[in-house]
Image (cartoon, rainbow, N blue to C red):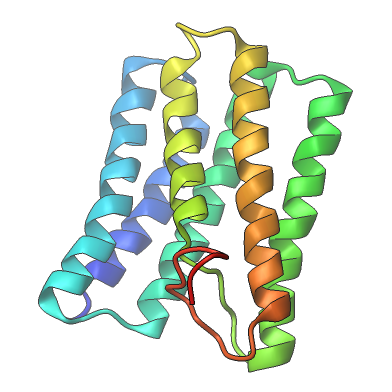
Length: 176
C-alpha cells in the first residue's frame, strides 16, 4: 500500500514517454494525456489519504511532472510553432525552474521543488493547454501559459532564496 502513490507517479513517466509515439492531438493522444493528468491528481491524493506521503514520492512526482512537460514541449513544438520571443521566454522560465532546486540542493542538501499554489495553477494551465489548442488561438494560449509559468517560477525562486528552512508544501510567497 505504501508504494502505490509512487507507482502511480512512475506510471506517469511511462505514459508521458508513450506520448512521443502517438499522433499529437489524436484521440489516442488525448486518452493517454488524460491518464497522465489523472495520475498526477491521484498520486498525491492517495498518499495524503493513506498517510503514505514520503520525500521520495514528492521527488518522484516532481520528476514525473518535469518529464511530462518536456515530452509535451517536444511533441507539440511543431504544432504550436512558437516565435523566437516565446522560445526565449520558455528558456528563461526553464532557467528559473532549474535555479530553484539548485539553490535548495546547496542550502538544504536535498532535491526540492515546492508545491505552491502558483505551481499547482501553472500545472492546471499547462494541462489544459493541449486540450484548448483546437479552440483558442495558439499565440494567446502561449502568452497566458508563459505568463502564469513565469510568475510561479519566480515565486518559487524567491521562496528558495529567502527561506531559512526547506518548506516543500509552502503554499505561497505570502504564507509561512
